[in-house]
Image (tube, rainbow, N blue to C red; front, side):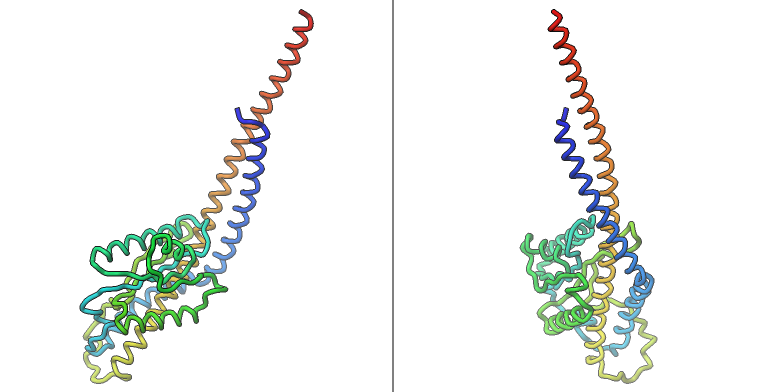
Length: 288
C-alpha cells in the first residue's frame, strides 16, 4: 500500500492544481460572457458574407478576373489558420492543426505547394515542428492583434494573390456553434465561390467604377471580412473550449482527491493497526 506521506503530497498537489483549473475556468467564463455580445451579430454577418460573395460575382460585368474565376493552373496556396496562443483549451488547437495537416497533404497529392499564415502561437509552433513553410505568423490575443493588423494582412495577401505568387487562399478555424460544440471549418476564400443571379444584373449597361477596380476593392474587403469572421469565431471557440476543459479538470481533481484521501485513511489505519499489533506482541513476548 502507498506511503501516507506520498499520498499526502499527491493530495496537496491535486488541491493546488484544482485551484488553478478553477481560476482558469472562471477567467474563461468571464471572457466568454463578454464575447457573447458578438455571437448573434456574428451569425448574421456570416450569412451576409455568403450573399456578398454572390453580389461581387454578379457585379463583375462578365470581367474575367482571378478573384472571380481563379487561375488556369494552381501551383501554390496560402493557408490562413487561427489557433490560440496557449493550450489547456481542449481540442481547440489540435483540431485546427489536424485539418491543416490533412489539407496540406491533399494539396501535395495535387502537386500544389503551400505556405501558412498563422494567427496564434500554437499554430505557428505546429508548423515549425512539421516543417511547413510559414509566410506570416502572429499572436492572436487582443494586445498583439487588432482589426487594423488583420486588414493590413488581408491587403498583403490579396496583393500576393493578384500578382500570381499564390493562386488560392484558404482559411481554417473553429466555428462557434454553442458552448459545448465547435466545428472546424476549412474554406476557400479566393477565388470567390459565390453564386450570383445573372438576371439581376443583365440590365446594367455600365458599372461604376470599372469592373476590375471594383473587383479588386471588393475582393480585398471580402478577404478581410472572412478573416474577421474567423478571428471572432476562434475567440469564442477558444474560451468555450477552455471553460469546458477546466471544468472537467476540476471535477477530475475532486475525484482523484477523494480517491487518494480514501487510500490515505486506509494506509493510516493500517499503520495504526500494525503499531497496536507490535505493542501487543511485545507485551505477550515479555510475559513468556
